[in-house]
Image 1 (cartoon, rainbow, N blue to C red):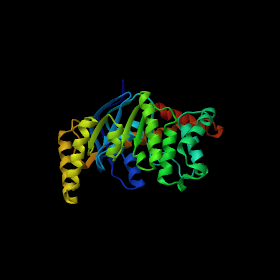
Image 2: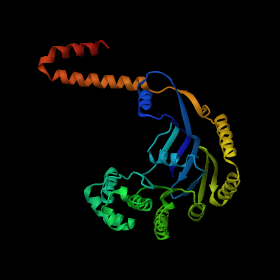
Image 3: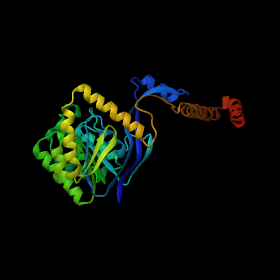
Image 4: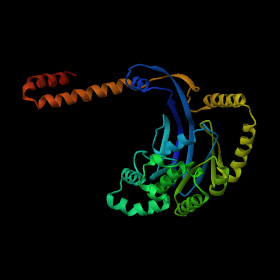
Length: 319
């Protein structure tokens, strides 16, 4: 059974720098020339039940974007994403609130996952025991080290009975004992037939844990297959890439992006400046309609404005 299915998925981000610019994009009824960054381009991928898949690629290849798409944090601009089951994503400090204590964060995350107080209280001791951060469990997250944040995030995620587990560099921090404990728990998940997406720069971890590897290169799948087949090719690429100067690396990236844009099935324009039609008119019209509806409700409940309410109702009928 396919747990994760992506078909010709493309994800672009508007390169705006201020809240004012973002607001204008939403509410201005006109085409805007906006610089965009294409994080994923025409990605098709199917991951079945019980598969443990390693996701590799140099920085900027779209690994975290793909993880966020699968977990539902962001949405694709083009293509379809189908997820069969509940997803838990584990990353350093992912979803943790700095002002809350560890215990409060556990309660908040569990509430967001739909658990009631009885279920949360039942799971709380096991989560705290797995995190193994001692008295810091009642301290604000902002006082935690990156390793402690990772421990807590992992402990919460592996105790929520998710069908799909995304581990995004969460094992890059912490000691060997905690790493072994995490691997043991994920092996339990694997035996239960759960799906794991393992995102890491540690090729040793990928090699020892994953049966399959997907190699992303600047937003596209370059190779997808058995770990023994894909990982040697990626290791060779890394060795050659690291020998390049900064200028040569930038040129390699630019050439690959141009090639991808040319060959993409979606027919998307190359990365850079492009004209984007934002749904500003629709959003503005909805806002006006909502405000008018609210005003209508108020005046209908106010006797002194009864005549005005009748006039407003007549105005709506004329539309």
